[in-house]
Image (cartoon, rainbow, N blue to C red):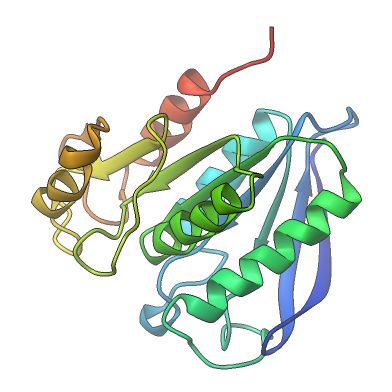
Length: 209
């Protein structure tokens, strides 16, 4: 049985409302952080795509953490256009690394959350401590200045996404030569298509030998 814990961390703007999801009774084999969509457009950690990613990583044996960005739920502060949110995600990462030392880290996000996680990965690369792998669903190309991401990043996008057009994602991914997995008929929120996200990530995730 999966276990859920609610807790609070102190970020750059005050309290962060957090949830930890643990896999069964076995010790976790990794850490996963999930970032939710844009807070000014209703995005919270309860978003169905973010929750699908979280449950997928729990199923893969990862201790999985989510938190509400600034100004969402009981998280303090105001929206900071991805900058303070990336700082807060780094606070969460440091907390998780301290609680589960030595485990590999996966970063995943949806929509605006992909911008946060891609920025965090750049920081981690610069510090010589990159995440094991990224999963970006509805990558925010064209909306925010998405940085480059590692070649093994899993990019999943909806064919019929009218919030972040598929063409914009191709423009961003093409010079990096990173494949984009397109879900036929899927809109931005993957209505009735969430199972594809879970199945794809589960199938593509590297498992230890």
